[in-house]
Length: 238
Image: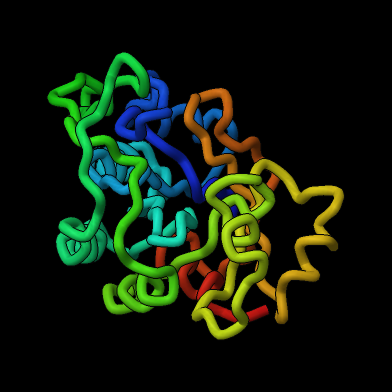
């Protein structure tokens, strides 16, 4: 069956995320747009994941716990997990391996943490778009340890992408999926020359504002409308 998705959505916790990107706003906009499943993937932080998952559960939307990671190579990748508990355990294992500097709200905006009523209960004081001291290959292994999966983010962008940083995608990486930002680019074949094998192509919004959340356009085939069903599909090589 077809499952319409957007697996790369930021909340107001991300420094570049609008404060309108609160749990209820995100879930309701995703439902209005006709999506079956989304993933919450803030930059290097997870404080809004649990509340978004709970709001989604009550509204009948599948919300996958996730995070957008910045590795030592300055590559952004999306990691998805089956449960909030798995995500928290993973984050606890790597949290102290990230460069920590104070956020500058006047420059990057507040990094907001919400409750279930979309009230800001606190802000994250440390700037979240800084790298971990972990290389991509090791990060993939760590994500797998906690039953998660990882895919390189927005590979068609000129910054923070695996193609821009390394020039190619190593076929020894334990990944089955790649992400196009927004839509499949016209020059996709040029990117494919940097790949030695085929990957499932996910098209996500990388939404930082409500209007950017994907329309009901991109889908994957699943055997069950659940996180387990999604993982079975994404963990299968094409």
